[in-house]
Amino acid sequence: MKFEHKSVLLAETVEYLKVKPGGIYVDGTLGGGGHAEAVCRRLNGFGKYVGIDQDEAAIRAATERLASFGNLVTIVRSNYEYMEFVLGTLGIEAVDGILLDLGVSSYQLDALERGFSYKEDAVLDMRMDQRQAMTAKEIVNGFGEEELFRMIRDYGEDKFARNIAKHIVAARQKKEIGTTGELVEIVKAAIPAKARMTGGHPAKRTFQAIRIELNRELEVLKNSLDGMIGLLKPGGRLCIITFHSLEDRIVKTSFRRNENPCTCPPGFPVCVCGKVSRGKVITKKPVLPSEEELSDNRRAKSARLRVFERA
Image 1: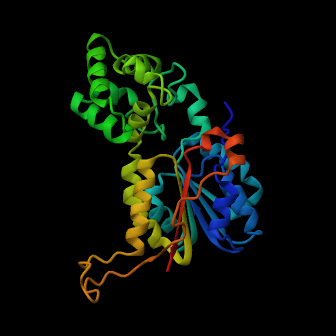
Image 2: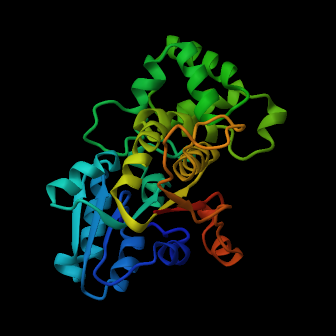
Image 3: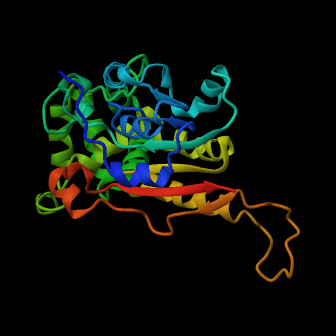
């Protein structure tokens, strides 16, 4: 299957990056290379673009797409949590801009063998990096009921998390849950018929929760933001596109804390904690897709772009 994915908020992200010829830019979630291609065009043959992705299919697609830019582009198969190490091996200490597009690619959702989709029956997988040993199948069949409940409640924000966890445990005692289709039917049975009529696919939140847990998505994001801001040159920008409230909250909180890190009590006349601002939040409110983009790409619906500029 061909790797296809429409880059969300493409024009807006490239604009906010303030790309300059000769600059150094890093894409921590390279995907099919859509954002990368747009940035590389603006480099005018000078500078450097480092693309990082953990998905082998994405690496292949982006390598092909960006081939015409030659030595301008370096592609590394890794997780963006190791960005500082990856740049260090390339002799890069600071960069002019960093981009993260945290959405699951259309390819990953549509390729049945990847096991991300709740719309088709396939083996439970959901690994972003297929070198990883653990799959969604191990989580569904191996986590205790309380672990499943907390995961679905916290990462899926599903009010029926407790009942879904109970149903999963009861079902797997009869036989191992091996496919996405089996899991969908179990989740459906755990949600009241009336509730299934609204709010989209009944298994959507459970699948999101499993995917986040398996790929450590929120943990990696939370642990990486300060380090990425530290890699920026003065005036350099970090642009992050999120696709659900959990990610957006982490980014929003981190950006605000880096802009105003002071921990002194509000009544103090002067700051004594010594914590200095690392820059400013450029987007006081997240940038949303235009009506035109939404009509062209329904998967852009929940996208949010936030931008931070290093002092």
